[in-house]
Image (cartoon, rainbow over all chains, first blue to last red; front, side):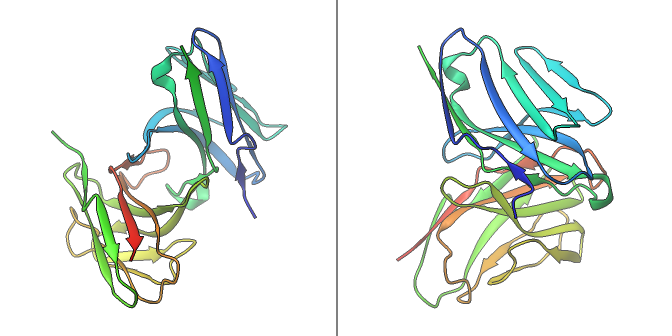
Length: 113
Length: 113
């Protein structure tokens, strides 16, 4: 039973436009969420995070939105650049589970020049 | 500079053979993790260790073993009991406190001959 789901396996966006990557979760105990970016044959790198006490966190071109009632979060990238092409993983943690992360299946973003 | 190294980058396993994947970190992190990634899927936790000489099973520990004799090192052995070992293996480390980011190594791809 997947507790963190990324229902879109891939997304294609034109350079300069907005990319929106979505993530849904089922475990109401999750209270901290992260996005990681992964290039092929490399390890994931941390991108941005958000605590459940917030509904938005922004870092440069990247913004994460959290809708707790819908158990949904999204990552917005504006403007999208070809270098953003990668697989993006959503992850969640539960305060009672230490620093353990539960990952979604990933969304492959392709930004076309 | 600090980071996580994994070796080798590619590893081939023969049927019935045990193989060991190396993970070393110089970030002075107490916690270390092993994940497995299969094509089109997210990261699944194999084993984790919050402190030296202690480790716990993750979601898919069967067929794997680990040791944590030194803070810097967390090797993973893929035993012959693991019937489907072909995957991309990722090691991570973090400070073992809630909300601390996990940092990932570059990964090892294991293939079965």
